[in-house]
Image 1 (cartoon, rainbow, N blue to C red):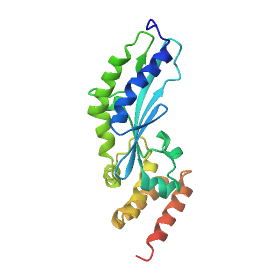
Image 2 (cartoon, rainbow, N blue to C red):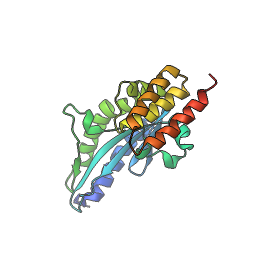
Image 3 (cartoon, one colour):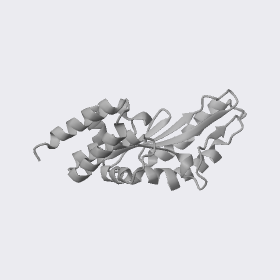
Length: 211
């Protein structure tokens, strides 16, 4: 063995270097993703390979995500492992946007890359920036506060309002629920999502109509 690995082999060696660090921190590996169960949410770290990769070069980025188990159960009627994907996340952020100079960061691996050096560097960033951010959103209340502020990384404004109104209903915050429903009506007016909004609002109102 002379260390002259094709890029994909070196990428896999890099994953094998990084994985034990995440496992010791409570994550479970599933392919190129790592999952962790938090208080009321589920955290996700996903390494996404570029479509522009070749035999000599692998580009990848790191996606972070958080899934509210309450929202997944309420809106999807399911909380199976096959639903715990990046697409299912209620908060999503690429690790590069948490760097000192925020940008859409893609790391590169070729046959000469020292995977222990790159792995150590990425692990340090995850420890300092990525994992604390995921763990910050360990409760539905933390997601609620984020969406009340108007921010919703990884979501559209419509998705934010659907999620916010659902959590407001689930947590019994009726004043917030009413405010969010009004925003949802305005946001969806005249758009293809209007029917979805009407059905969603009706279901929430039916839950609380006798309160």
